[in-house]
Length: 121
Image 1 (cartoon, one colour):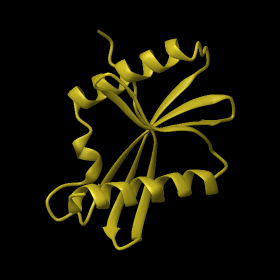
Image 2 (cartoon, rainbow, N blue to C red):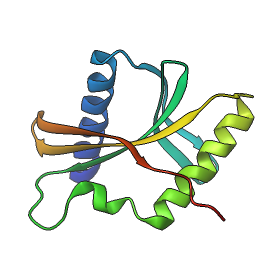
Image 3 (tube, rainbow, N blue to C red):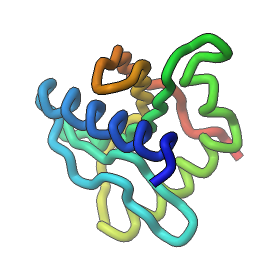
């Protein structure tokens, strides 16, 4: 596995542990439908929480959340719609970003709740 993939996996593990520590129930990790993917799908307070995880070694060049651009948001929303239909869910949805910065499991985690809303198309 490439080094950046190892870091990304460690970041997702840290984000999942963070969510569980804060009483989120994890429904799925790395859920896929075709070419669409959702990093973490969780539930808390009867709300479906879609979490995009961005892991970086440092923030010298950019903040991790800056990688979640309009194109990425559209793909996350498409994947979420597919997820809701597949599991026949009718519940409020919230879109969060968790940034994980560091390496060797020495991570700084930031949870950005309601990081974005679905674009109106």
